[in-house]
Amino acid sequence: MDQALRMVSRLCREALPQGCRRLHREPGAREAGGSRACGSITARSVSFYGREPLPLLRQVQHLHIPGRRGRPGCGKEILLLQSSRTASLPVFQDVYPPSGIPRRDAWLHALTPFRRLCFREVCQGLGALLGGRSSGGNGRRARAMTSIRSLCKDWAGRGLMRLLEATLGRQPLSPDSFDRSKVKSILVIRQHDQLGDFLLATPALRALREHFPSARIALVVREYFQDVASMVPFVDEVIVFRERASRWTWANGTAFYHSLRSNWDLTVVLNTVSHSLTSDVLASISRARFVLGSGARVFAGSSRNFFYNLIAPGPGGERHQTLQNLDILEYIGVRTQDYSPRIEVSDSGEREARRELEARGIVPGRRAIGFHLGAGKEPNRWPVARFAELASRLTGSGGAQVVLFWGAKEEDLRRQFVAQAGQGGVEVGPPELRKLPALFRQCDALICNDTGIMHLAAAAGVRLVAIFGPTNPEEWKPLGVRIACVRHPSHRTEEVTVEAVIRALEELLRFE
Image (cartoon, rainbow, N blue to C red; front, side):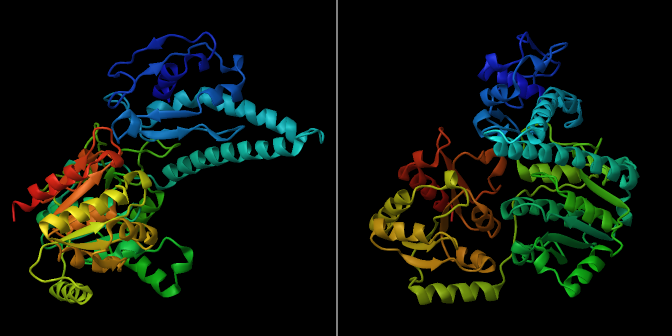
């Protein structure tokens, strides 16, 4: 929050409290807007009551906080107004404090001025709520109730965390107390993130298998990618967590509970992208003697990640996601030298994929280049027109075949491609997620956007040209020698040229 106020002073100095114009440097602070920027603005004995809260918040409606994504333009955008006149309490999860200061708690005191602003707004709203039926009274009542709900939710959340820490908190242990020779069963929890985040964590599973070759290793994942998780060769069992209540039955619920309570020696929560309370509760249910997790992203209201008794230090700055997962295991001396993601495709799956592509018109022995057109986030998508131009270049001079993939909700992208390219190549469509790795492996290379499909292809060992936009590839690209990343200095996918992609593809295919 101190960092946010300091950045406000750069963006809109007149929005600061009256009389507050001096910037104060803290030890270990960096310039605002730089990597891991971390400064503060002093407001001692200066009250926010001198300003009207809503005009102040309107002037500083958005703040860019440089966090784990790196550059200021790629940081998390914090919205301080939920609507045109509703104050919202900001939460800054990805702010890096100076070295030696705990990540979250060091900033809690700095929220006080904005709490005062929001509290004053709630008081004003209560006056409107209890007042007469003047013009606009219904709107004021609605805004007041929104502010009250927001503050009550925040206070209730903090109170719940304090209660859980007091009742369920584990006593932290030193890594020296962990005896690896007695570990016979390991539970790894990674149900709280997306497919790509999970696949970037597979090197951590490799490290566990290398250090505990005879141990039973189970993995808790989301239902969406359970089939992909079953392809990870380093685990013995996949336990499925269903996010929707309607997906639970008495049979699968009791089976899930008994799987969690299987007397695990070690439970590992890989919480590098987000911190899930559900994952922490599952770790507590496991009854493992040792529970290992990162000390980063402490829940508001608690002093530490109290569900763990082996708490690995959080990342010291920008660091690749795979390495952040391995850093957690490094705390207990578990490491690996192979950072590449990995899933295994069965021989029967490959034969089925080969037959399917041949039935759709693929010519065996002729070079095949796969295109995946989609991405969940529009800024991550390379324009369809560029894919169409690339297809014309590859099929015209190079004589390659184009194998076209797209997602279940991306039929319009396929239509655009066919309209602009003149032909759609071999159209595979949106097959089941479990079939995609085998289909990708029938291609000499795959060209795709920064999305979960990119990580899936890389883990299957496919040569890959990945087109990046706003996301920093130094943190999120799959690690491996068969992967080429293309990114324009502007970090805009539409600025990536067809020539740049062709150069990356030729370089990749040169090493067959």
